[in-house]
Structure formats: C-alpha cells, structure tokens
Amino acid sequence: MMKVDAGAVGRAVRWAGVGAAVLTGGLVLISALGGCGGANGPSSTGPSVSGPSVSGPSVIGMDAVAAAVSAAERPVAWQLSSAPLITVGTGERGRRVAVITRDINGFIQSIKDGISAAAGKAGMTTLTSSPAGSAADVARQISQAITQHASAVITVGFTTAEIAAPLQQAHSAGVPVVQLFVTDPGAPPAGAGVFAYVSPCYSCIGATMADIVIRDSGGGADAVFVNAPDVGIATLEADGFTAEMRRHCPRCTTTVADAPIAQWGTQIPGIATAAAADPKVSYIVPVFDTASPLIVPALAAANATGRVKLVSSNGDQAQLQDMKNAGSPRWVGDVGVNGAWIGWASMDEVFRALTNHPALADEKIGFRAFTPTDIDTLDLSQNPSTWYGGTDFATRYLMLWGLS
Figure 1 (cartoon, rainbow, N blue to C red):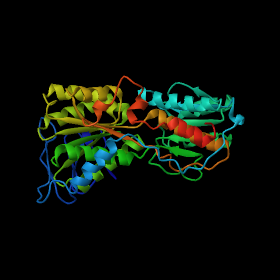
Figure 2: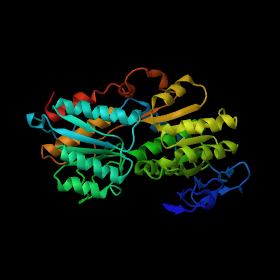
Figure 3: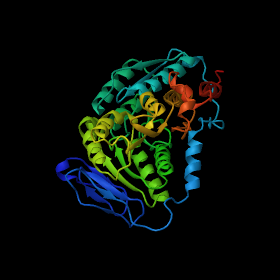
Figure 4: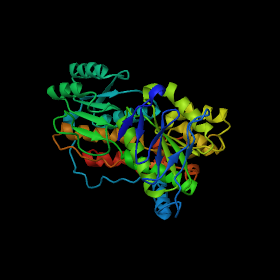
C-alpha cells in the first residue's frame, strides 16, 4: 500500500490500486477495474470523479454478493465449539486484570463490561483507569498494574509496535498481555511480549460493507471511504472494502480519504463537504460510524442527504436508530460487533494464560450486518447484546471454562 503526499492539504492519502490519482481534498480515486478508470480535474466545489468506461455486467457475481449480505444479516452464531476446554478454578479468585484503553465510548464500555462480567464469574476483579492516549501513558498504567499485582493486562486499541516497550515491561514481570484490535485473527509475533490477539475479522467486515454498497446500488456506486490510518484494524477494513469493490463491481469507483482519529474533528468535515459537493458521489463510508456526526451536517448543507447514503461499521445505537427511522441521513448498512462478546473472548485468553494453556489464534467472533432489511427486528432499547441474536455466548464460555 503506497502512501502519497497530499501537499498543501496536509493529509496523507492511500493508493489502493492501479490507476490512482490524487484529487482535490487529498482524496484518492481507485478504479474498480485494474488498469481502467479516470478522474476529472479538480474544481472549486471539490473532487469530481468518474468511473471507468467498461462494457459487460455492472456486477460480477451479484448472486454471491446478495447471498453474502443476507448471510451477514442473520444472527451471529457460536463457532468456538471445538476449542480446547480449560479448568478455571478457585486459584483465580481474588486476582486482578488491568484494562487499558485508548479512548472510551459506548462500544468500548460494552467491552469493559463484558470483561468485568466474565472475570467476576471466576472471582476476579478489573483494574481500570483513564484512557491512555500515548505509549507513555500505557507504560505508566502497566507499571501501576504491576505494582497493584495485576495477574494480566488487556489493551484495547493499541498496535503492538507502538507500545513495544511497555509490552516487554509486562512480559519481564511475568504478566501476560492480551491485545484487542491489532489485526485480523491470528497469533502475535514471537518475542512481542503478547500472549494473544483478540479481534473479529475486520477485512471481512470491510468486504461486507462493500457488498452492502454493491447490492444497494445495483453495481453503480461512487463511494468515498473515510479511513483512520493510525488504527490498524481500520486499514484492514479499508483494504477489505476496496478489494471487494474491485472484485465484484467493475463500474463502481471508490475514493479513499485518510483522517487520523485524533484529527477527525478537523479533517472529516472537509472530506464530507468535498464529497457532498460532487454530484456523482452516492455513498460515504466512514470506517467507524462514530464519524457520522461529522459527516451529516456537510450533507445537509449541500442538500445531499437524499442523494448520498451511509454505510459503516460498529453498530452504535444512534446510527441504528437513524436507520430504523428511515429518514435523514439515509443509512443502508452498519456492520456491528458485540462488544460484550469481545470482552468475554478477551477473558477466555486471560484464563488460558493463567491456567498455562496455549492461546487460541482465533476466538471466532462474528459480526452482523444491520440494514433496512433486518433493522426492524431489533429492539434498540434493549441491551446491545440482544441485537446480535439468540446465542448465549456467556453460557458457552462458562462451559469452556468448567464454570457452568
């Protein structure tokens, strides 16, 4: 993935395929068909992009795309039945697990609640602190956790590379670390000082978001994807989205704009304004739906709320309620992950570490696509865990741990 300089815009942009061109506002046009595509010159109203001129079907494999979305709309199923059983006994009672997060929002809080609930089943408690905004903050909080005799540490939202020194500090103290949201499911690198990674497949989530756009547009989408390049899983999601668009939608165009999360407040409104000013743009796809409050005002100001639709991930209540209201903004997809489930999955890895069992490379955390097709089946006033279907993941984990 090549980085190119956005010059005076002061924002890095990403080149995700053949035939990319830098456009006004630091955006990059990605032709959906390798080797084909083009971009109009910049104008005073923002980027103007045009799709590739190709013959043939608008969508390659529409049946497969539609089937993939339909499958993702179904309730999330338990897929960890073959995981090795462990015995979580009285030896864990009274132990502490430290939870260190980059920031806090409703989704992160649901993860923390899941961690606390799962830990409590074994008589453990959690140590929490203010969000850690830097590697130095993480180092300080890990030092505190060691001083407070934490038996394990869970980090949320940090890459392994950016907190390499604190991870080694914990490893040297004999404290296992479980990291959330570093990469797609897989084992951490040897020598990294990390016991396990826990994450759903974010490249798969990105592909599902693309499938929603393709199905909704019938293969004629012009989409602007807003990425957060400082978050590893965000780039995985962006890559999954662009790859799926190239694979299945030769007449679609995708524009990727990078906006680091710390700069969302200043950068995303400009990206949204430029996109809304382009009459060809039909979808804005923020990597996380918490960016939508920075996008919707620009759509309203450009009278584009009826033309530009929104697709994203996280499945937060406010955005799902907008979708359910079927008004403005026009949400056609939001792919969510059950935060409480992630919390329990994190504790599964902690318990495996504390009972001297190998880590699982994949906790097989599913996701659900919320669209106008299934949104009316949800009661958004209920606990978010209920939105993902009837799987009693807590009971399943307790069975894995010998605590049922």
